[in-house]
Every structure is written in C-alpha cells, then in structure tokens.
Length: 217
Ligand code: E4P
Image (cartoon, rainbow, N blue to C red):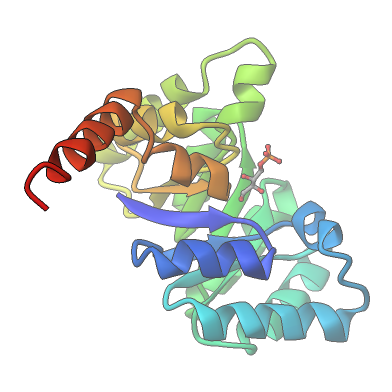
C-alpha cells in the first residue's frame, strides 16, 4: 500500500518525506486555503514546490464544475509537472472530464466518493484513483472501511485498474483497517502516519533496554 500525505503544509510534507516512506501528496481547496495561499499564480507555484519536494503523484483539485472549465483548469494543472494528478469531483461533468483526461493521457483522482456506484462510474471513465472519504462516512454513522472493502472486491471481480485511495483518514487504526480492506493508497494527515509508530510496550521496552545498557556501557 502506498502512503500519501493529505496536506498542503510544506513543513508537514517535508517531515513525512524525510521518513523515506512517502509516495505522494493529496491536497484539496480547504487544505490550500488553510495555508493562506491566495491567487491562481500562488496556487500554481505551491503545487510546483510540492512536486519538487516529493517524488510521486501530487493531486491538485479543480474548482470548476462544468466540463469545459474542468478540462481547461486540469490542463493547466497537469502542465505544472509530470507528477500532477488532476483531482475532479464526482459529478456528471466531472465524469465526462475524467474520460477526456483519460483519453488525453492525464492522470485523475475522482474525489468525494461515498458509494460503490460512484466508484464503478469513476473506474469506467478511467480514473487513475478514486478517493472514498472514510472519516466523513464514519462521521455520518456508516462504516467507511466497509466501503473500501466493497470497492476492492468489485474492482477485483471486474478487473478495473483504478487504484483505491482511502481518504479522510482520521487515525492510525483507519490506516491499518484500510490496508486490510484492500486500499491501494492511504492519504493521511501527518499525525495519523506518526500514530503508526506508537505503542506503549515499545516505549517501556526501549526504556528498559537503555537502562540495562548502562550496566555494560
Ligand atoms: C483527500 O483527498 C480529501 O480531500 C481529504 O482526505 C478529506 O479529508 P477530511 O474529511 O478530513 O476533510
């Protein structure tokens, strides 16, 4: 399973990248706004900086919602760097645009996936990735990880090549559960990635080893 970081914060991207386990980055308009980036020039420059920092796919989301606008915006984003993946919302014109990008050799990430039906449609259009939003599904009283397992089963039966990018990850357990359920990628906040490191018995065990090491140092 690939690890992406879900942020537009350069310090967090650097910290995850320095671990040596990072395969890519996802962003969305909310994450970009959080960093205080203003204006299309600054947005484009920010994506370029991220592409230069991390070797791997970098999702950049369109904000247009009509076919012509999505295609125009997506072409500009894709021109920034070869690793840009155009992130397109799961709407009718979005599906049409994903098919256009597929036919024109541009990678896509179909975002805001909340059902298996949506995942099937995105795969039919040739999306490189689909992003089911695990945490938001959990928040609404359903089981987000179950959706990952359902999509993984369907894609396997049908032979779809679209990769399942588990998004809206809230904690380390989500990452483990998504790995079990067959996600190809998990895009996670830095805290959730670092959460994988933690176990109290590791801390207790290390403290004891270091204490005992003093006896022969
Ligand atoms: C990723 O591509 C999504 O935009 C992101 O994971 C959404 O996460 P949230 O539900 O925490 O906003």
